Amino acid sequence: MDSMITAASRALAAGDPLGALKRVALRDDAPALALRGIAMAQLGDLVRAKELLRRAGRAFGAREVVARAKCVVAEAEIAFASRDLSWSAKALDAARATLELHGDRVNAAHARYLEVKRLVLIGHVDEAERVLADLDPAALPPALRTAHELMVAGIAMRRLRAKEARAALARAERSARDARIPALAAEVEGAWVVMDAPAARRIARDNEQLLLLDDVEALLSSTSLVIDARRQMVCAGGEIVSLARRPVLFALARALGEASPDDVPRHVLIARAFGSRFTDDSHRARLRVEVARLRTAIRAFADISATTRGFSLVPRRKREVVVLALPVEDEHAAVLALLADGESWSSSALALALATSQRTVQRALDALSAAGKVQSFGRGRARRWITTPVPGFTTSLLLPTPLPID
Image (cartoon, rainbow, N blue to C red):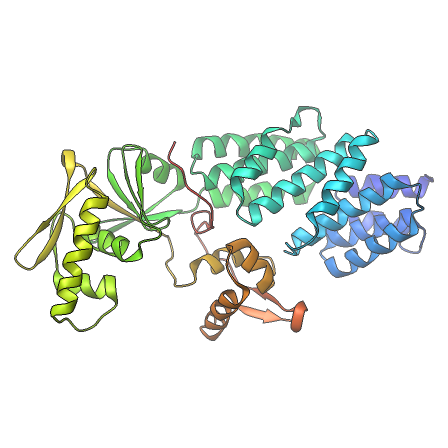
């Protein structure tokens, strides 16, 4: 490797893409193409970066397997940054195996972190956590240690483990200072902003209060009877009853929880559960059946008593009843949550991340676009969707990941 390539590599490692381009901008040999691609990626021109890396991969000879593997890893990073979640995970795994076989543990670890990032983006948090647990960042350079801790913090936030998330962010902050890369320090700072933003709303008897992630964790581990609107579950004292597949029962539980200890009129329950503006004998009969089913489902936590005008929720052991709602509620909240990361998404990537059909996502995007909440650019397969993040709110509770209570 000649001196200009070495200098460009050092500039990129220090987060100076312009300095790297000054040294290799006019060169078309394989190493220079690869470095130019990485530099363009750091500058935000992902399309040009992807093209350069593909040219570099073809330019490297058949025997230069390590260099070609590095190009694959760099291309995967660009793909995930541009939310191309359909990019071949097998190609990334093969490149990682090649790097490990030839002793390049740093770039192999980088490939692992990209794998974790993809798993998190598509909502496979359990698998991402398992992969991350097998990685030891101690012997890695500061930049990768920072990436490791950011991944740990991100997963902890989704798991509602606030103390663990804060500790990981503190470690990431120290590693970012050691790395001396401004973009990395800014990423850590952005993670702190998310950590300290409201994560949910606490609703009790028509009173609302914004909660930080620490408050949400404390609430779910308390003895209160919590009706969690995000995951459509009822929990208390570490026990959980999921109503995610029984939306009518959850709608009734939430309406009763928001009014507890007062009762809720029958016509209000019918409107909330069945979406009917009118009430007749068939609605009242159906309401009695669904209330009986809900009473059976949550009998370990509470009873439901009939009153003159409706029904009331009566918690056992004199527990406080709290409804935990999203900080911002919208019919298409999950789509907005993914778009709120500031990146541009395709409808196919959104469908993959939400585990739903692309047509369902497209209908949601059309509705959000008509409401002025999102906008698109490009056409056909190149069409991408973006939105502006909701100021002052974290999206960690909006994303499609499980929320176990530890």
